[in-house]
Length: 357
Ligand SMILES: [Fe+2]
Image (tube, rainbow, N blue to C red):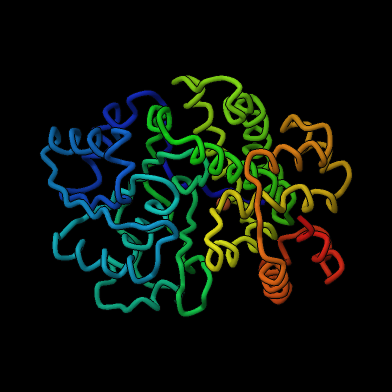
């Protein structure tokens, strides 16, 4: 048994302003890593800048993080952060800016190293990191994982290092006006994290603590995810908390087969991450131990895997080329690190059933 959660986590209304002292303690010059626009639109960037100015901390903004950020973008940002002489990094946005912030903070603290240091164990720790999530799905604010696009390998690949943010500041108001497609895709990703953490050889009563709490909270949030009820501030905080609990769960167990199957679909066909991981969840559960499967479905509010399959199909339908699905399946079958996290043996026959969508 093991449990590691080095991130200090705060989830509340006006979270950034409430924790200005914690932000002040992390450094003098912040390197703010974000995407092209959403952090500006949802107010999170302005909230952070206001606190930095009030604290007398200087900052540099790098707003060029693309969806599924590449190693090349990380290296470009590292140069910008070093030129600014930043001594801590703030990732604001969905999984892409937060994952990139971790890799950038790591590389800024090893300025002589080339990109391969991302995939080589050992070396200096990362600069201090603050994560501010503005979607309700990736959980990156509480994991050590940083998934980057590798153009050389034509897929996405986690860096070797575990880089946990020092501080996660979670405020539901940033998703209140998010596009519905972002809420739905990221909420399905959070559900995928919860399911894959439960159906996992690394699951234990510590990881289950957050996973089952997350599944129950996700079930409570379902009317907002299905849009039968309009999202308000309280519901938004709840959705964010379900996502953070999901992140805490996979921080212990890792993700497994559905995530592994998804990466090639996202890289090659541009299928959004939540859609690509959601498509395999019901099939993945079908082969799990009966008692475990029932416990997961009950906690998440589903009568059986067909009910889950139908909801995911309605929320995030996926159309993927058959040849691409089979290629992805073949590559996962050759990935012992992922296969060993699945609690049932996977041969070619079962893999074919997992990709029957
Ligand atoms: Fe995910």
